[in-house]
Image 1 (cartoon, helix red, strand yellow):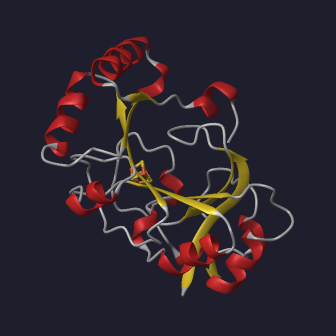
Image 2: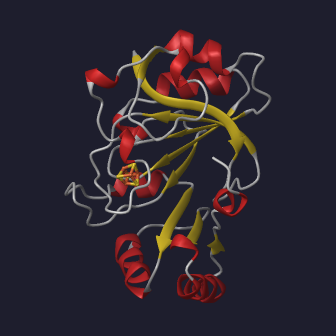
Length: 222
Ligand code: SF4
């Protein structure tokens, strides 16, 4: 089993339920979802011309496409090595659910780590049952993929970027019939726009949902 890794770096989780928690981020390469406003377009293709060494993906990247294949044993040995203090692994992308994450999350949970994945919800979620699943549903994107009902049901957290009322309406339609008890639902204002901030605050108060702020953007860190 090989995972195509774009970057591995340690930072603070900047958004959602675990905001402020020190974390190691594992970004996997590959995503066919096609969001128009994607800020990680360099992760979309797993192109052989962009393959680099494993050492080259350790540390935050510069936004250029790159990836290295890591087998499970080498990846777990690296992540659990002495260079990282965090015990919270965030598996993101790209779209991490292109890959079977059960072997990796099983090993990391067994090593005493908490695992979290961040996914568009367009693919089946294959993880250890204790892995925290954050679905940021991508609705009507260019890739033509649909958000999977099974991903919404598996989610521990549904985190939705919002710029206007239309995005709340889309979310309502998507969540119709999904049992939200025990799930965190968070609205995340897009691009620090004042109008989006006001809308998200109002709806979060009305529904007792959470507000997710992209604190890493305010802090200007990766
Ligand atoms: S799902 Fe994520 S990585 Fe994929 S296109 Fe959308 S924002 Fe970008």
